[in-house]
Amino acid sequence: MSQRVEMHICLGSSCFSRGNKEVVMFIREYLRKNHLEDKVIFKGARCMGRCSNGPNLNINGVIFEGVTISKIEGILEKELARLM
Ligand code: FES
Picture (cartoon, rainbow, N blue to C red):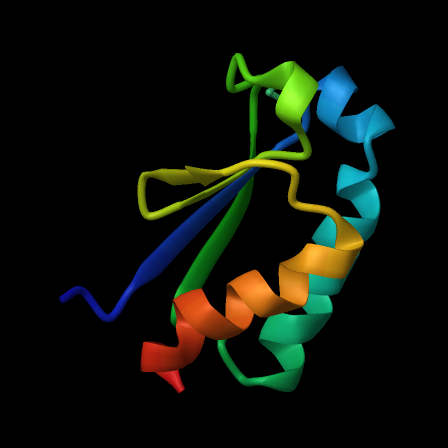
């Protein structure tokens, strides 16, 4: 399994209106606190075509839908555990 994780968060307008900005801030802070900035590539992405289910986050090719601020920590803990 790859030791590198690539995450892309949708920055389209629908995901924006559903709160992706707070999720972006949370992810940045999480990566910093856990010293994962070198192991995780985190970028913005264009609309993923799943607007009504946003905010959407792609982690190594798997799209997570409805990634709200209440769900993001659990997702990161599970998906990034192998890097820590
Ligand atoms: S705006 Fe995010 S999937 Fe379309």
